Length: 365
Ligand code: MRU
View 1 (cartoon, protein in one colour):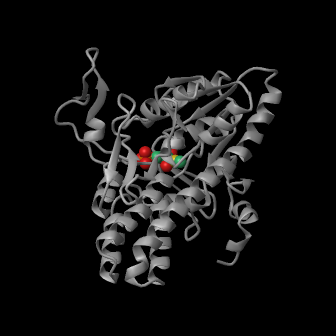
View 2 (cartoon, protein in one colour; view 1 turned 45 degrees about the horizontal axis):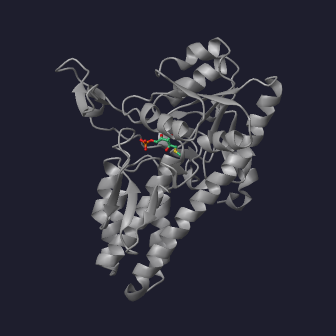
View 3 (cartoon, protein in one colour; view 1 turned 180 degrees about the horizontal axis):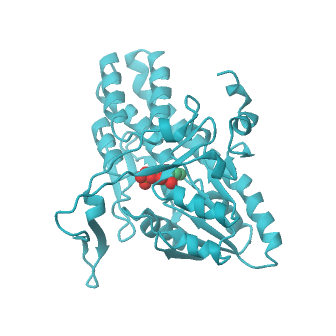
């Protein structure tokens, strides 16, 4: 996607052929800056501190982190160390584990002298596959938005989204926002309601930045507003991303997603999750029971970051001093509340049979 007229991916190998450049998402929307990663440890810190975030991008960064690790130490011990340090960063997005397992399995088949080259090539392939998957999610989701538009008598299709599941969460295009970009390009009028997504404000800071940069009409709303809009017929469809989706179609996504799915069900609003197959955890069925939910630092709740009128970016405290704080970063929306799952292979019901109809090779697995 374009930033200031220049095409960018969220992660790429710099001109020196080894350094991995990422967009520093902790600085958006007030500054657009790149950060350069030179070691597996730096890649791990970038994931943990959310310089990069979003399930697909976390996976790709981990893959490049392994490549950086192979540059320093391509021995078996070096490989294990890189995978361990990267794997300990964020527990919920399964793309992390998926990418590390893929890198480890491939590198185990190569001797140390080849590992660095092979690792960079494979990380590049994972990044390219993510771009292709997100573009395909956009094409499949476009069909849903076209159908809604046909019923809207020329009016804009009103989409509600939560968190940031746009190109900043992936390598390009996004998951939940890929259909929005595809529809925008196809000339379908849209209006996106963007949940601010406390505590880190990925919606207000990142989704609004993305949509604004691409001229997609949108309104940022407080997290508690979506139910009211749905009751008043102002939302045609909810589309969210996912950090881990079970084989039975339960969807883990940013905290607050579940409440939107409940409101959508109560108001007859279709609720879709858009995700590449790298986000499906085929080893589990029950998301509420089995998906590990990351607990983030209390400071994300007690403090809010923003820009003062004189242009300084500051963090200020918003919670009464001394109050205890909890910060689970994700919740699970049970499959029964999900109208459909939009993947790179098409749209399926949120159920084991539905997902297997798109991924028959997983049958019996
Ligand atoms: O904590 P984050 O910002 O990494 O959480 C991101 C989300 O929850 C996204 O909605 C999810 O990763 C889907 S992204 C394509």
